[in-house]
View 1 (cartoon, helix red, strand yellow):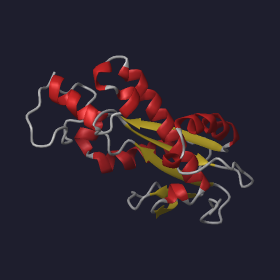
View 2 (tube, one colour; view 1 turned 180 degrees about the vertical axis):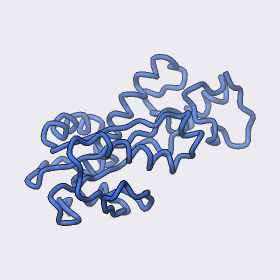
View 3 (cartoon, one colour; view 1 turned 135 degrees about the vertical axis):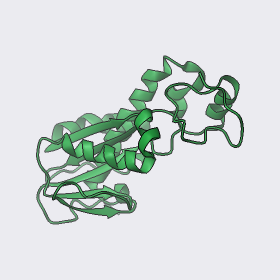
View 4 (spheres, one colour; view 1 turned 45 degrees about the horizontal axis):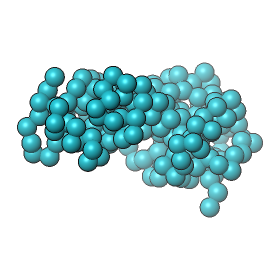
Length: 200
């Protein structure tokens, strides 16, 4: 089923989504995108259904053709302070702050959001597979976050973040077990199941 262009009927409708909520390390990254009403791209879909190559192909197209877009990072220290749900919503708010055009309506992937200023919003479960602007936001958030994780992989290659992107893979957890966690890890998360951690 093709993705829908608009939920509210408003011309300036922003879609927002985040990436990295379930990771053990690194930031949660959110994006907000306002697409023109005639935007079309047959490749655009929920970022989880696309390959890394497809996402990187779409990134400049979305940024060039969007009416406006914003991207925001909330890093692990703040995640540990305010919890991952609040960090995800905060990242989405900051991505909307970053829009050069003020949206008339906001559609949000998922089922949790805090009102943003006086702008009406709607949460949509699995919205990244239903609406183009949320799908576009999911592509930007995921791609920006992956690029960041590849960058910090150079600092700590032992965790292999260029591959696992900070998610709780068996390999990532084994590295934590062997060498401990680092300053990029989220220390309020259960990094290892019921085991002692070395911190450095």
